[in-house]
Image 1 (tube, rainbow, N blue to C red):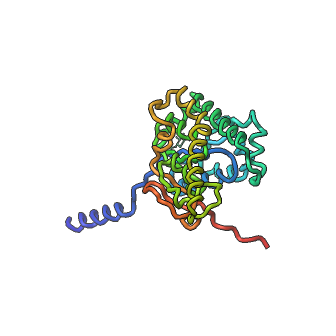
Image 2: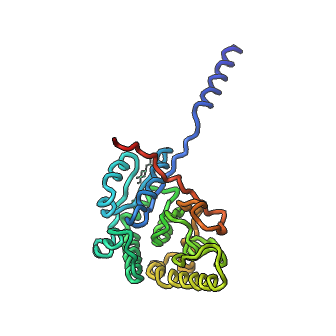
Image 3: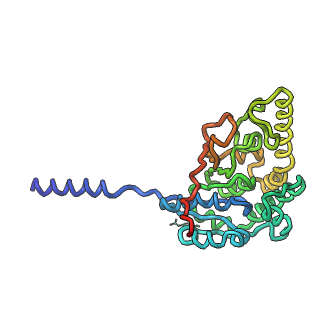
Length: 286
Ligand SMILES: *[C@@H]1O[C@H](CO)[C@@H](O)[C@H](O)[C@H]1NC(C)=O
């Protein structure tokens, strides 16, 4: 009798050791806009999460299919896709301009036009009650959002799901500071496009400070403007500033590394994850 209960105990212990708890979450990915290599980098997170057993859904439109058809076909075997209407279908010239060549410097009016289109498509998406109902029914546990398209904050707030922001670039002084509540110091962190290094003379520091103020003003009063008006029109937490909506993220991940950046202060919720999204290289064909 004693021997029998002993073996039962041993059996129970063995089973308890073999079975480990599985935590499968529903995760939604907002890849931002179908420009450059955003999709490749952001959807890599989906691949890594799906490999760990999570149920991953990616929000895309037909422009993604045009550019990344092969990759998406492969990913369809382990991730879900949800479609929305692209705002660029009505402005193909604006879209062509951003995607045709990475070497063309866009004018300020073209940049504003692109952000206007991104805002319009975000508004069309949050007004589409069928899509929103379907996404709400999926009960997402987490959203992973590309911070390049500031419209992510409106979608996240409509779905009311905790989120993690992802930037495919390094942490830009001022722009990322405003968007994610980071801090940088114009005395030694050079602003974008100034061409300065971390060692600046006094006049250069002065110029750098003006560059900080100019980029903050452009971001706050021009780029975010169409998104702010959607926030007010649709009553999405109108008491908060748009920047506060964006800053509610649990974490902000930068696909870069300290080695590629200037020395700068970092907040504990901002993490450099460079190399994580890199794929295993294929051997060269002979
Ligand atoms: C996976 O996510 C989709 C939403 O894209 C949802 O419809 C489906 O029910 C989810 N599956 C599980 C097992 O939770």
